Image (tube, rainbow, N blue to C red):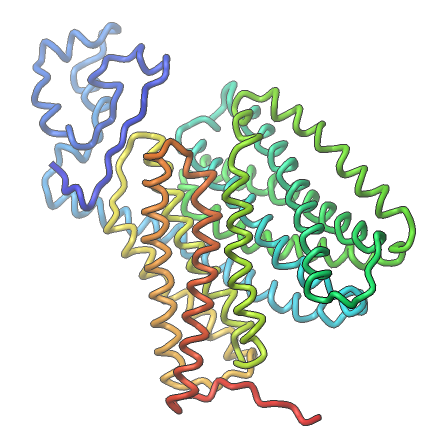
Length: 479
């Protein structure tokens, strides 16, 4: 019997197809491994086969091979699990860190463009849109990873309906998210700057730019994600280990490039009805994609569910935005370190949550201890690569010393450990409440770590400055 603290076992109601199988083979309960095997004698095993297959073949197909292996081989299997996870996830995590840095550099560049200086509400739009879009794409990655591991994306009648249905659903969600982000940013601009001159044309300009960038980035990233997961399935790579980190970093870059491009092109026609026409044109696609989703039995139920975590996650992340805005000018390096700190922790937590969700859907087992320690250990080399990059290119105007490295690594490990535990708890909790974790966990998880990581980083910078270990204060410029 396996240790309950290390393994999970959950079962779901079998489908009609599963009921056609013998009950002892239909359920893959990990806790009945050796005991269940000994209950079947030779006559029972032979009676289960109608096609004349041998007992050894039935045993090999019915039960995982490691259930009747010695204890030392089980330990070897755990090492192999950790090795496979590290080999598959580590490159994608490093790529995601590079993506975060590129996105940060791009944001630093376009904030000086004339269009962003003239329309300051675009600065409010960026974090809102990135948060909404990022959650949509990571949910898509988690759903497709689960489908791939269940075999639903293998050649057959379910592959293309699942892929096209999810792409149509992503368009519906992207258009709605783009409209919400555009309207919210315009409304927040009115609240924060009550005396500023705003107009109907500006609101249409914000909303149309947001919807175009959201829709086109959804198309690009959706097709990329489908191709990536199909390639993972072909080469026997677990997409749970690589999909979420890649889509989170690439999503930021693609969305930022498209948003800045749309803002520049449409700004020339801000005071015309062109933006209004584009808004209604994009809005007209909603019923088209909605109808496609409604006709698709694989994603039909997702048309009206899963919106609450996305909206609430945006509200939670706004708390991190308020903190970041307050301290970004007070402490140097906050703007550079925060995206990578919370982004990497969120990616590691999303990998864990996606893996557990796949296990829950497939009635298989997951080794908590091995996966948690492996993911926690991968945080160190990836953060080291990040610090080497910003040190080599003199980014952030940071004063590097032993106290800085020690403090940053401590809060990085705390953030990652917290994110892993929150991801595990939320995934199991939503599953027990009857909700699909692939559609609910990641938005809450990333929003929570946004707040936690920002608070820990600001507190650490404050302590370093007050203790004299490292002056993190930004030097005021001469008037």
